Image 1 (cartoon, rainbow, N blue to C red):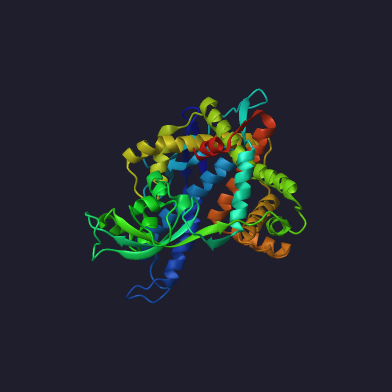
Image 2 (spheres, helix red, strand yellow; image 1 turned 60 degrees about the horizontal axis):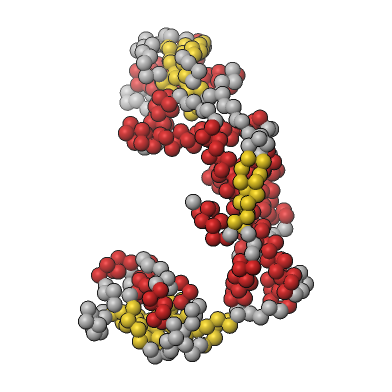
Length: 450
C-alpha cells in the first residue's frame, strides 16, 4: 500500500492510493472460500464447488468491496497520522483515470481530491467594542409585571358590562349580505377575549355592551385569524373561504377578572413560604427576576453582534469547487447544480462560522467535557420539571435521565451546541469591551425578534 500526496494549492490536494495484490489477495481468497462452503449451485455438493465457478460468480463483487474497504481505511489513517485538516471527506478525482483490471487483478490506483481547511486568524480582544443591551426595568414595566401576576392568580367573576380585558361568551350567527340571518349558515357559541381584539373599531363597539346585546362583527376582527377563527366558529380552516364576513354576535355572558390581592398568601404562592414579605420585597424580587430573565437575551444580542463582525472581518477562504462537488456526492437525495449554486452562499457562511468558532475554541483551550455536558443536561431537565410545576427527581435518577437523553444523537448535538454557544458567549463577554446600554422593553423585544 502506498499513498502519495500532491498539493494543488493552499486549499486543494490530491491523494493517490496504490493497492498491490499483497494488500487484498489474502482477504479476498478467504471470503471466496467462505462462499465456496455455503454456496448452493445445482449439480455440485455443498463445499465441493470448483473455485473457478465461485470466482466467476462472486469474485468481482468481493474484490470491489475489499478494495473499497482497504482504500477508505488507508485514507482515514493517512489523514489522521499526517494531521491533515480537511473539509468534508475525500472524494474521487473527476479528472483521474482508473488504473486496474477486475478481470486480471494486479495493481490498482485510486485518486482522491481533498478540500483543505484554511488557516483562520481570529482577531478579537479588549480593543473590540460592542454594545451590551439591557432592558430598562422602569416603573411601567414593573407595574405590568405585577398586574400580570395578579391576573394569573386572580379569578373570573361575572361582570355587568364589557370592559377592555374581559372575556365574552357569545353566540355567533352567520348573516346574509343584507344582514338578515342566513338560515343555512353557521350557528355556534364560543368565547372571545377583549384583550386580544386588535381591531380598534370593533373594540370601541363592544366596550360597554351588556348581556343580551347584539353586535354585527367580522369574525376575523374578534379572533387571531386562521385556525383561531375556525375554532371560534366551529368549522375547519378550509371552510373559512366560503363564509360571510358578517356575523351577529349575541352576548350571553361577561366574565371579568378579579385580580389577586397583594398579600402574604400571594407572595408565598409565587416565591415560596417566607421568601417575600411585603410589596417592597416583591418589587425587588420581580426586578431581580426580570434582570435574570432578560440577561439571556442580552447575551444572545451580544453573540449575534460579535458573530456578524467576525464573519465580516475574518478572512476565510474555502475550496468552493471541491465543496460543491462534495455536497452533491454526499447528499442522500439527488441535488441539481443549480440548487447547489443557489444555496451555496448560505452553506459557506455556516461553514466559515464553524471554522471561526473552532479556531476560538482551539486557541483558548475551550473544551466541552463529558461531566459538563451531563450536568448541563441535568439542568435542562430540572428546568423542564419546574416548568410543569413538578419537583426534580433525586440526583441518581436525574443523572440516568440525562445519560439517556444524550444517547439520542440529534438531542445530544443540540445540547452540545447550546453548551458550546454558552461558553462562546462567556468568552466574548470576558474578552471584548462591553458598552452597556439600557433600552426600553419594547425596543429590546424588537431587537431580539430580528
